[in-house]
Length: 129
Image (tube, rainbow, N blue to C red; front, side):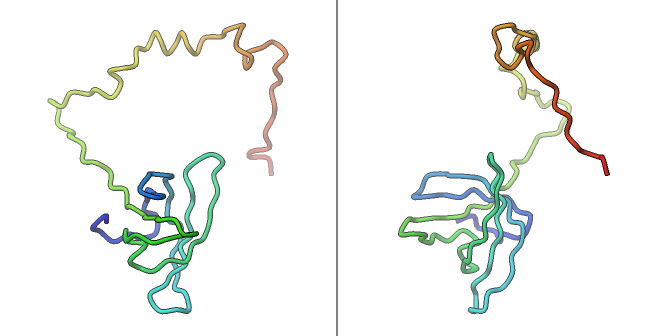
């Protein structure tokens, strides 16, 4: 169990039979007609992005195990790990990535089907109102 209460806009990791399945953001929580039950709208953070509304007890929202379709499920609130922001902290975020390798990978490659000369530019209607 996560040990802390879960609220709207929190990120949760959904476990299915003790295996991490997906991340979701809790968009809304509202009361059900039954006491201590709630509607929980989840935005699943995966492709394609989609949402679903589950009806859960308050304890389930806060990390207690429940079943869905006979399978064990659990929500675990995701807490951002503390970050050492001191000047002495070694920044190893990009240790495994070398910029020349990244630039080489991003360079136009004739063998790459995405970069073929018959590619078309598609205009999206963003901002046109």
